Image 1: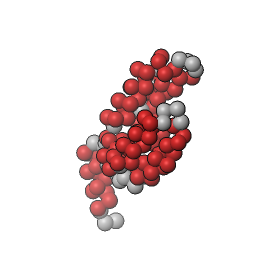
Image 2: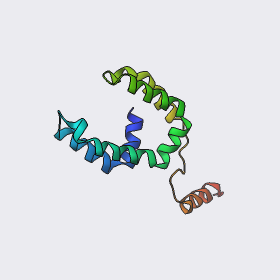
Image 3: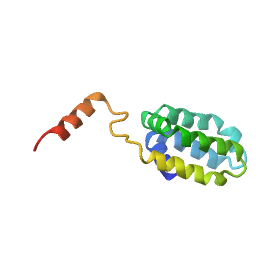
Length: 116
């Protein structure tokens, strides 16, 4: 789960911070009061190219994880094996160059192809 959180924090820091502050400020009503901020985190993570690639290449593991969460809303920790499988898959995805401008990729590619 840490890998997924690291990715989310890296690319959606502002949204995660606002959501976390809302949850901390509303311990008994956060599910209702912070719903909009939760949706902003979800929208950010679903639109980022790195996360899209991970979801695409690990879609089976991700779908199984989401299904487990829906079926075990009162006991999300029971989905730990699903999380582990998704994270293991995510860590194998090659994200080199994903989300970078084409000019940056061209510069990186020409540097790695040169003979020094």
